[in-house]
Image 1 (cartoon, helix red, strand yellow):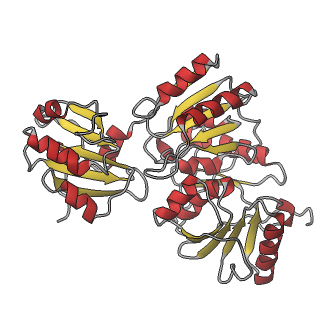
Image 2 (cartoon, rainbow, N blue to C red):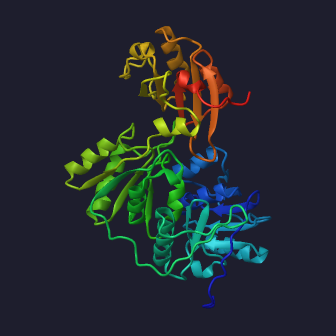
Length: 422
């Protein structure tokens, strides 16, 4: 390729066929942005990370579980080639060239016809930076611009066309030195804008990120290529990375002198096993910084228009884990006592057991007509709300095909606020 600079352009991929070849770490980082762009994504790979598999199971992408073969790029508008097989990568790249389809290659940027810029978003503005062959400088410039937009030191002009925005900034130094030890960062309920400022800054300075599926996955796309992302996704009822393996990975990378961020959904200490990780790090003599996150127990109901407390309606709310049924001997919850409370109950990890939980609450005296709301994938573009009562919520959840992650709110606060369409 010549030394001419790349020509920047924004691709409008909504409804258009995009082919991703390879289901590994690169795909895991790039797929959320393609999904958010509305692309019709087809993944071609014989295997995938748990997070990528969850995207396929959730219907966000189509997955053809096989290796690449000639003809796979027919009718494609854009191609991402990201396998560990150089021969397959070269063949797919050659097909893209013959079909005049823009192709990004994770293994050989010089052989690609398109490059992925370092991107970031703030308040409707998308910042994309290309600095040639230095991805770390691209990421540092991107971070400086986005941080300026977020803290108000850089103001983006308002454009007449809805959805457009531009921002520019002069060259900026690298962002931050490596961090000592491990940062347990609460990523919030899902919307990448709901991570704390400190959490985002630590993430930007990381060398290694160990991420949960329920963390704000769009933030992974903003990481520069040198950052190692380890998938610690715990997919409900499917594959998982044992907690012991997560602890070992945190310790191993920290001892290697890396800046390690453990990116978790919600808050690290709200049903997040964050304390187990902090204890393991303490035993290993590794410094640990805990960055609280916005818990889904409050933020997700709020995003759906439900206040967990409201004057004259509820003076208390109780957050309960519903991952085991009320009659399970492992349960630590006093369901009879909960049924006697007059306030709001917020259930996390309770989709599978909601029928049994509702029945237990009714049997212990909670009225069967108590309002219930299920908020699935709250604060994200896929958020939806399903309303029911304790008497109907079990069947309603099945009929509506409710899947985790979802937050379930029980109590009169469900009916507070503007009336929902019938």
